[in-house]
Image 1 (spheres, rainbow, N blue to C red):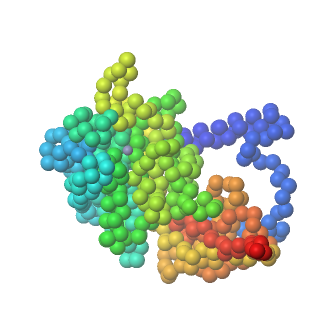
Image 2: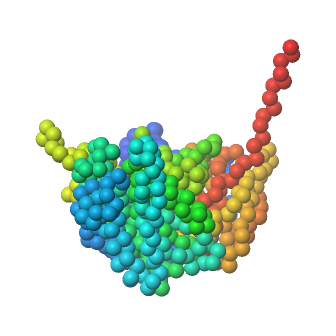
Image 3: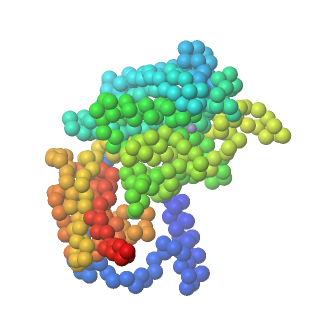
Length: 472
Ligand SMILES: [Zn+2]
């Protein structure tokens, strides 16, 4: 599957090149043309040694699409999973959905050699969409503890929401099958638990950091489960290394499927649009490949929200996966037929080949991130008004780290490139490189080849002199 996707993207590249040839003097953006800029550095550009990414990747063929489908079938059979529906009725309501997820995770935990821990987290929350009254809610977590004493306090999260909604978000009676929104994301999260905890039991992958596979409730009532999840991981003393929200990742009806999954990341609130979330998105794309991931540089779809948002607003790395092109007749709709149009979020619209790709890509991203050393901190850029850029950073001891990659990119480019590799933290002078023409970042590299997310350098702000106050 990966091969096929890579072949497709190579073909479209050849097509673009052919088009540019025909178009002659006006090359398309991104095509190689002679860029008449001064070369930096003029000489002596480092030849960074690039270590291979960690072996033992999650194979696409190992994804169990049938079990994903079976779980979604059980969720849909609960009739509705509105958070305001019953938590105690085993046959109908959100509690029925919780039971299906807990049962599946317990099966998976059995095959993990006792490593995977299943937790049902009960809490109360209030919003406009609970009529301002505290409502009981529950989240389900499966936790795979990290193997490294220090890094085990860093947690990587994959999450889907198991609540669903009909047209009226306050109506606990109407059917709300929620196969795609968000049975699909729950199935992806649970399948990641199986793929990664099984590998752990085989002894193939001992992840250094902790991984949490979540199915949360309360999303449709105001991201209540996700806000609570963020509080919960903080209370447990974890640092969030990254959060992958999978919401509406099940359908891909347009001809040519499977297409790339969309990956949304917010800009953050600093000038250069390099937020921790953006760095997580870049890391996921680099791990899974451009043939698999379509990065979209906005926090979410226009006018929409999701469970990555509380993490993103807290300044943590959090991104959202969503299918290539949504069909709004199949979301947030009470099942019905009107004027020959069928409304409702049914299992029959799902594409399990696409969803299996999404599961694989989430699992592989989690695997590599949880194998990586901690990202560096305090990354700084100095050297303004001098011929050389100076990049400095700090990092704690880690015997499993081989060193750091210094990254750079044109300010108008979306992706980092490796400029140099350095064995230890401190300051590195980039001889003959301007501070002004590119952005810079640093990331940690493990002896196993796993990379942390990038940490962009902060610049010393040098405000221009202000005009003197006019004389009175
Ligand atoms: Zn959703």
